[in-house]
Image 1: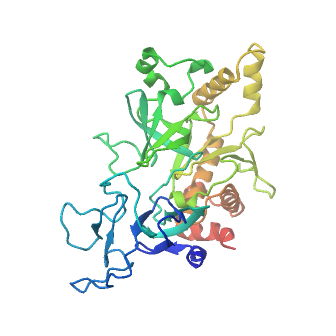
Image 2 (image 1 turned 90 degrees about the vertical axis):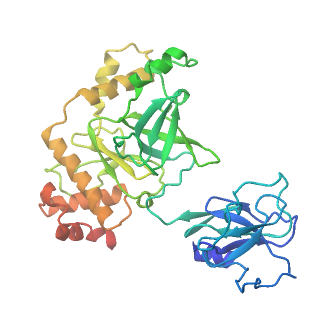
Image 3 (image 1 turned 180 degrees about the vertical axis):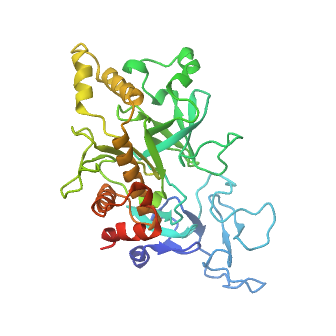
Length: 393
């Protein structure tokens, strides 16, 4: 197992780990894997039809396993002909009994990807850029696609809902009413009146930032916006990129400074969100591939709001007024151009499949300023290659 984990990349049907006794707890099953019972030594490697029955690639082997139950069952991999009562090879086709599997076990990859190990927990992260595997604490940018049942349905692909109201196979999460802040930051039990007023908080089509609170057994993500930094997004632009291009970092709320048309000099242009400055752009990096770009809220706005409030006013009330002012204040022409430049810089990184970080976005945006490239020309093929040259060094 050690050699395999050092190689990182695995294919479906590849053995990741083996426990050599019934009582040995050598590994725990993570997503992208399934458990198989190791055949007895007396079993022949070939069955009556000449098919190989050991481990192997998906679509070429027909294995014998007990799944999560104690009874033996045939597992038909993709490409085999079987009956309706045969279970899939992921070990989740439904247990015959509640007893744990008996005999030596082995853990097998069910998808192509990279191996991730946390102590005894072994998972396989899929390589497909269209798949987002949520984890507790992830910051995501989503779009409301449904309201009802004391919860909002959130599309984590950030796509607009279709005419039928469905996003097909696109990943969705659930935002319960108990996971949002009430107006004014009031802390109380939600009532039926709050359920009726849910669309006053979020309605279909709204974009919002939220955090993954829980991952259920079936993969459903439970979200929340109880942090004062999360909530509805206004007066900005959304860029959707493959989730694999957005890495986890300490702070997913950043401000890019000095990217206006008159600020093409060198220097550190990235600061923590909330710093004072004119022409600064705020970027929210969602781990689901949704990147929100807007103007950075000036510190003077917060100071003026606090000056008109009582000193004992709650912080939630101040931030809600600040968010409302941001949503209702028109964005200047120069700021719209700066936001569009940051947006096209992100698109350039996506086109060359480069990791999207604040440093790389800043590098591409400054290169476009130094070269005197118009925002509308940044996505031309020749400029995409040239502007992203610094990210490949």
